[in-house]
Image (cartoon, helix red, strand yellow):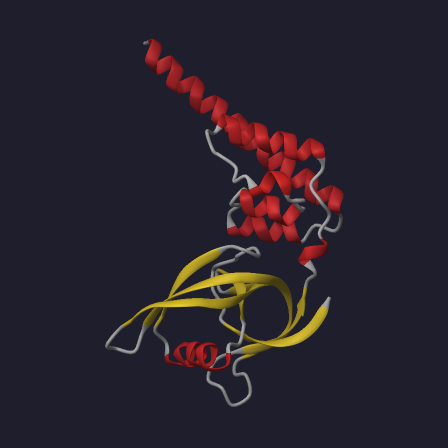
Length: 199
């Protein structure tokens, strides 16, 4: 794990490494952050915030591109997550900047344990039942548990709960339970649709 300082943009948003999303930037302090991202290519952090409270975890992201700029100074951008961090200290202003910052600990997500054969088999069964196609590169690559969590497109609070688990056994059990629940919901949905069709 690595300690560092990051510019911070608290949001009700959590991305796992590799995930992308779009943001609308309109506050002056975050327009300044966008300018710094463009001028000196800094990364920034998005601490996950829910009901006004920070969870303690966040996504480190890079600016991927500016999609559009508007006459009022706001902009639409695309970002991509490159890491995960824990917040140690939060500052309302980062030095002389208008935007917040903080001391964070970057987590070593690349050292996350690999997916077991049993978990990967169940994941493939779920993908097949839900008529989803897994990209070919995921069959040849060594998937780790965070990779699989990303492929499952977990809801943001579930991502945080997953990352808070202490052991790889608990993390794998969490994903197995998630897949089992989804497969059960699929079966119930198919059963209801089948009964409607028969009637």
